[in-house]
Length: 181
Image (cartoon, rainbow, N blue to C red; front, top):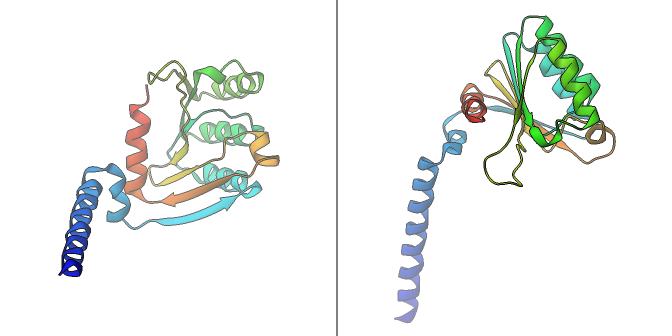
């Protein structure tokens, strides 16, 4: 009899947890992953930079970048070239790193090309950071991962990105981008 109670308890526990998980997925915006088909590719180390530049170069209408820091000349030059091709480029980055020499050079270069670069001071506390690392291309493709757009990330660190091609996922990221003030 004790075994039957344990079995019944186990079955009800599983059902309860599945209902909670289902509710959580319905309430959580990341549940979009369950409702859409996406093409996804992973890149590591030096391949991150190549993939990012390739996608920047393929942009037709707009690029939105949320990044903690970036100093990699090949990437900020690709963004500036996109702006010169009449691709609207907008960047949001962490205000704390704005005074770093490499960041000053990158921001100056991009602003001279007409790119809107906005310093973000997080409101989540004194030590908070705008620590996102994602790129949205034409509201169709999202590139995200550990990779900061820096020389150290490209030449020294173990890094990764994923490239997600999905209008719905890109729309979710774009909504997040516009909410960053």
